[in-house]
Image 1 (cartoon, rainbow, N blue to C red):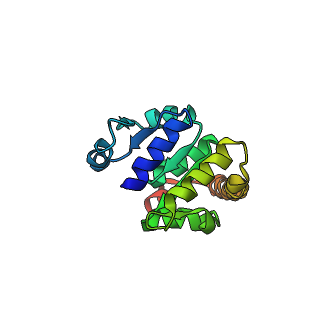
Image 2 (cartoon, rainbow, N blue to C red; image 1 turned 135 degrees about the horizontal axis):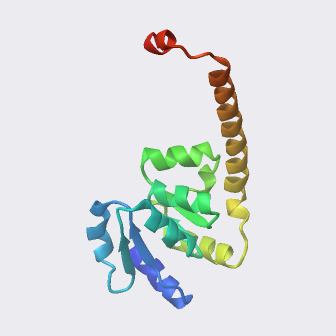
Length: 164
């Protein structure tokens, strides 16, 4: 936890107010360890997270939800994952090198270095996410278009619905 505390101090020195966004109520006790140095945010409404992240300069995400929302909004993010869902997301985007493991040596140094680059306007680390997002969006649009085309071309009758 000293890495998180150190990163929070770094954010204050840079003039940013860190917000610990808890996507799961089980995260709140961990976040409360830092409540004197960072704001804690929790909501059961997804739209609240969209509003929070949309107004953020950068999202440091320990949860898959943070990366998905940030990517959808075009907000720079730094992923730090340790479970299979987050690692699967990173692999889908071909960004294994961008994933920071919670157990990584020099994690604080790597976080501050990445943060400095992103906040300094260098978004090269995030370019692959944007490119892959565009490619996946095109693939999904083609899939949906073909699926709708197949559905429309198939005449529906009561017997075809009942027989599946």
